[in-house]
Image (cartoon, rainbow, N blue to C red; front, top):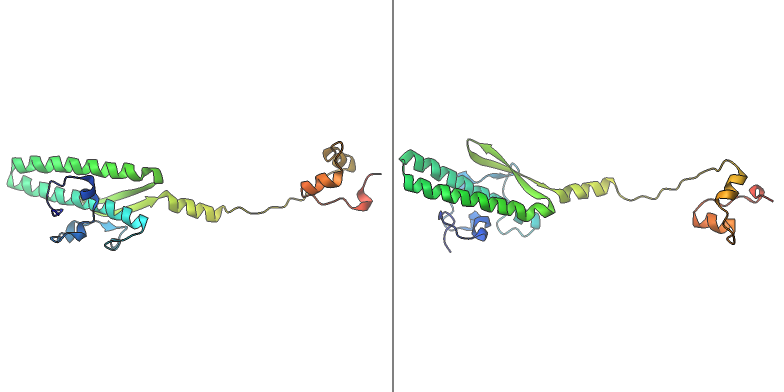
Length: 184
């Protein structure tokens, strides 16, 4: 397998793979933080952790390419600068492709820049918001007791030819009228 520090990564899968798995991995300064802290563990299996690693990997490549571009400009190496700019453009395209991949599930990364380097990624996912809303807006049983203003109105609102009033009130979960309240 080619090391990921090779500037010409060929596939989208190579760009989103965890760079910490490379044998030549030594570029810790280029790694953005994951929500202000450590990255998920290498080989994480949870869907959110895998999605975070994919975004972190792409932004790590963007950081690496920005650093290489600074070096090429200092050396005034036009050929090298052109190659790096093409790879930077490709990396941005892969980042956009990754965002498009997770847009339907409402997962995205908000990068934090410091001196043209991505230092942190804050992740947002609608599934978390949905779960929080379900806890706040859980279905609940509500019983309303409505007192009808008059016996005539109750009889008018609960009378259907051929169906006894008691049956209608039972279906509506209304309290049954007391024997003394029944019209005669």
